[in-house]
Length: 94
Image (cartoon, rainbow, N blue to C red; front, side, top):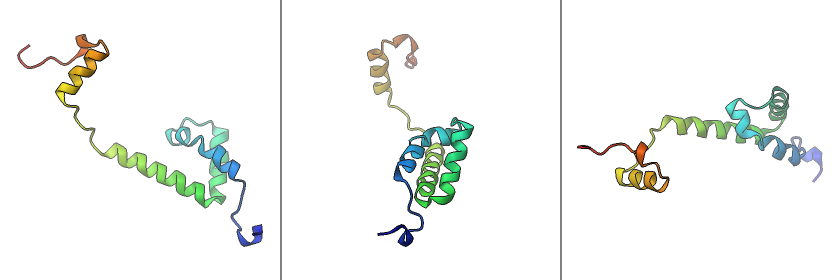
């Protein structure tokens, strides 16, 4: 089909290139120049806008849930395997 049938058709390589920097963009560590390029691209690319918005919403929701507590037995084994027994939380009565 021709581009006239798909007015938002564009270079998918550009999408891949910009979305490969998605984590840095969301963290605010992307260079100003690339950040401006990505935002200009998103202004005309609905697909990338959806991906970025979904990613940001997912990260936001993740930060809202409490971290699960690691069972004591698992924590003890982990510290032992990593040779960090000195840093292991003391058991009650020790």
